[in-house]
Amino acid sequence: MTTKTAWNAQIDITEEGRKVTADATLIGKGGERQLVGHGVARCNPADQNDPAIGDELAAARALSDLTNKLLDNAARDIESHTHQPVKGSLG
Image (cartoon, rainbow, N blue to C red; front, side, top):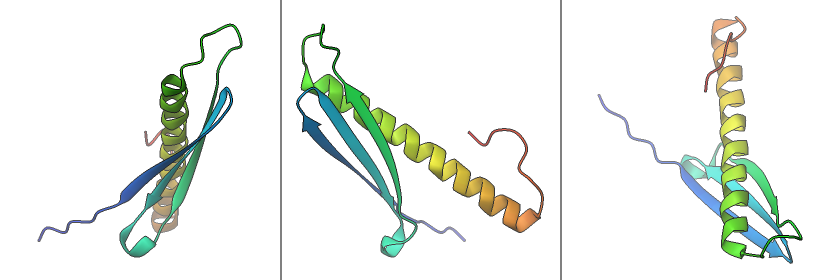
């Protein structure tokens, strides 16, 4: 039997001058198991301000943070089932 589950990801980006923040939100079926990753990018004053680059960096950092949180949750879930600590990296 095959089961298919869909999770949705949304990235919200806020630009404030030369600083960009991003929130990457993962929402499971029925709005459950919501996780949020955060990312920030700042333009060096010596560099040309290109908002698209800041958006990309902040979004990538938010997704990376979200990935780490999801892996931490998976490790805790494994430990709760096996009653053994997770050894090594899940990523």
